[in-house]
Image 1 (tube, one colour):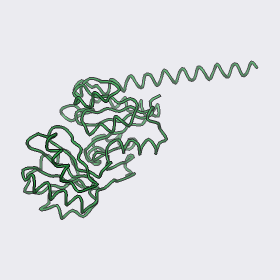
Image 2 (spheres, one colour):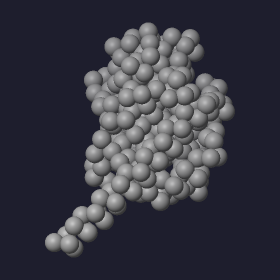
Image 3 (tube, rainbow, N blue to C red):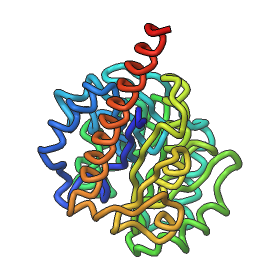
Length: 284
């Protein structure tokens, strides 16, 4: 029986207009009735995710900033922040070697971009709690990730190059064709999933997840039923338990409906089994 469903957002659960189909609302309350937990797992900011799912947010889990921020409803459970000195050293090295790249620094509460980088659109698209600053040394809160915009879209080549200049203990995770995230080594959506699984005493065999990009690799690898979208990159499709329709064709909702229907069937069979056993015991 499925007890937890987790999904990436952009390119997976959300359509290309960054919206979810309203039929999900009924599915969400059906999940709640069955005791199935729902997890929004994204590279996006917690505040943005929480806002998007209101008023359902209070009954959801969130894996935000690519696994760096874990929350249950309005309550923060864990923050896997970066070593501050290493984060700023990574920023300096990226700016030195790739002066055309743009940077957004995600903090525990706010996301920051430099005014001179003209990233207002990108900042407000992905981070509803944000600040424009003159330079990153103004940041005085824990840093969860450093997001890098590669304007050339050559994500695979440049991600490898940037990895080679990072301080020890940091890693690069790609997201789409233009963005890559620097995070603490070992931090990813899979880490967030394992945290929630342990917190709720749910096994990986009772979990279902969806993804489309390489930053979803660890997420899908942390569950038995990991589904890739039709629009997913090949590496994710090869890893997946199955492939569903694209984000534009509501592939996630189709699988969720099937999972909830099977849960009902299994619950009915379990109830019938209990009734039969009770009758046998009564006879004896």
